[in-house]
Length: 147
Image (cartoon, rainbow, N blue to C red; front, side, top):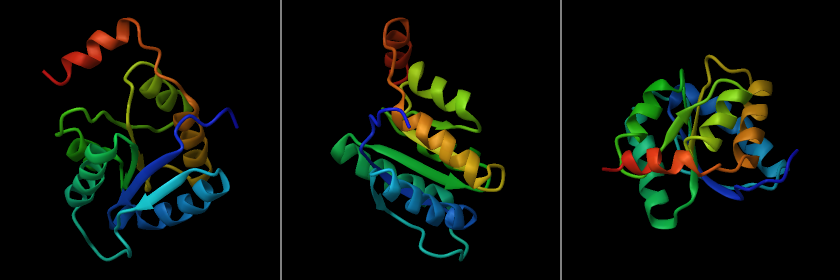
């Protein structure tokens, strides 16, 4: 694995992402990435906006990173992106994860548990946590997001 730049993150899922989240926790431990699990804690039905909000709320206090998982990754990324200074990227392969960090300075990785295998998810996570924002021409674009 490339050098890990993101050393800790807040992690949450809805019921559709619960099992994937549990598997990812083992991967994060092996990779020495600290995390705080903000739920959900079973596969009982819950609403993804509530869990996106939990992660965002914690990030606002600490300027850390986040990871959110739902069935497709779409709903939970939409919910997270409602908040200022949040750039949640629904990544589905290594290239999308790399570009999310390099060009968009994404601070939340979103995954779709029903659309992404665990093996692919670990590759996406490795890329996300080890890719640096390029800055430059991308910085002005990022600043426009919070206006």
